[in-house]
Length: 112
Image (cartoon, rainbow, N blue to C red):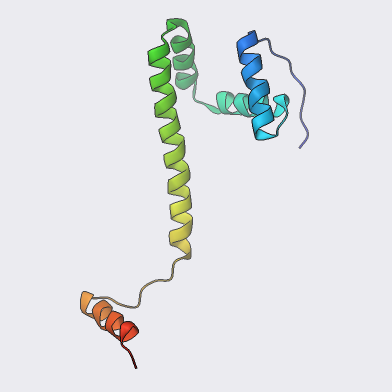
C-alpha cells in the first residue's frame, strides 16, 4: 500500500500507550497511528465534533462510558458480520414443519 508520511504531536502518556500497543499487537507505532487516523477521518463531522467536545470536558467517568459503548458497538458489528457469513453458508432446511423435523430426528436416532 502506498501512502504518505505525516507527523503528529502527542503527549508522553499517549506516546507510551501507542508504543505498548504496537509491541502487544506486533505492529509499528506508525501502523497504530494510521489505523487511528483512518477511523477518525472516516467518521462523520458530527462524530468528530463530539469527540472534540468530549476531550474538552476532561471527565474520566464520561470517557470510560463512551469507550465501553464504542467497544460494544464494534464487537456487536463484528459478531453480526460473522453471523451473517455463517448463516449464508448454512444449508436451507428441507423440513417445513415441526412434524417433519421430529420425524427426521427419530429416524436419525433410531437404532437399525
